[in-house]
Image (cartoon, rainbow, N blue to C red; front, top):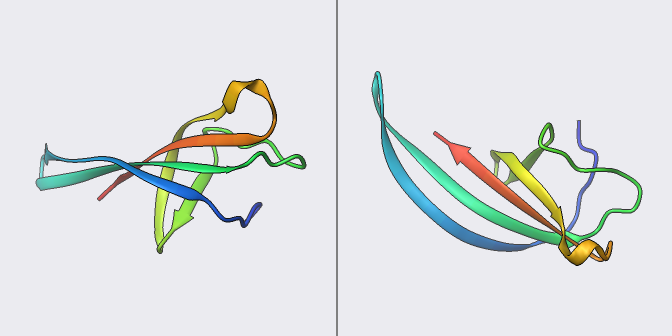
Length: 78
């Protein structure tokens, strides 16, 4: 269920390869910067859909506790 649709500044943080039992996996980290949503609370239980990939939220940070911008650290594993 979509709870928020917004524009974001996106920062590619890192990409790394790791071993899985059945082969190799890739972990991609991105940071999304959005305007602080007044009507909902974004938590680690939510997901970010970006370019048809679902990113897990690692944490959401209210920048400088000013309720202006929200920094969302995410991770995608495939």
